[in-house]
Image (cartoon, rainbow, N blue to C red; front, side):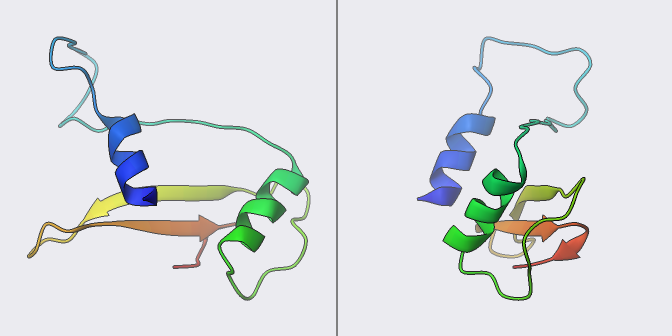
Length: 83
């Protein structure tokens, strides 16, 4: 369901054009506090994290497998790959 929702939110309307875009790449920024990041990490049942320190960040990347083209999500927490 997560990948399906990410695909839907990243889809551009076919009628829209963006002259500044390169190869269809997009960037979405969301901001929150330590309790937001901590809640996400807890909900994902990820190991190896403590309560988020000041200036923590979480990056969600939507990738596609080169061979099967199956989509997957890579999650980074403070620069460390968590998935």
